[in-house]
Image (cartoon, rainbow, N blue to C red; front, side, top):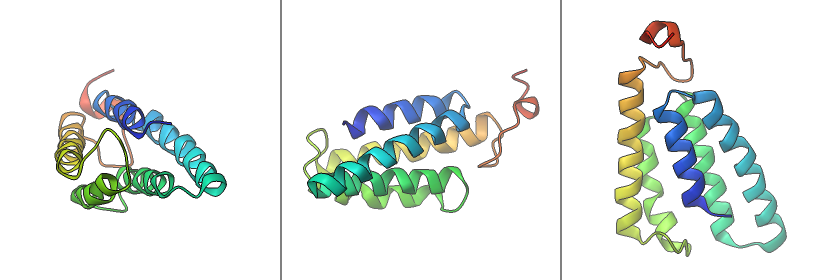
Length: 121
């Protein structure tokens, strides 16, 4: 399990306007991280599941985009080998920026995406 791979897949799906694919990936991976946490009780799995839950809330419109950056210290402290706290802050800031770009480019009113509104069809 690699949270960085999951975040990259979610980011690329969002960038291409595939909000449904991103939420599907989030739901599946969040369940796997929660299952792994229930077996191993490693905090990094719980933190990864919480991060994916926060991203799902952002995509559904229940949380502001800027709230994703608060997870930087959590990811940096739970032993994700890809991230230190500073790198996590930069990565999550970039992810928030990509979400804003998507909303602007595709005229997305999260969580609803209508490709006819942005002229992609």
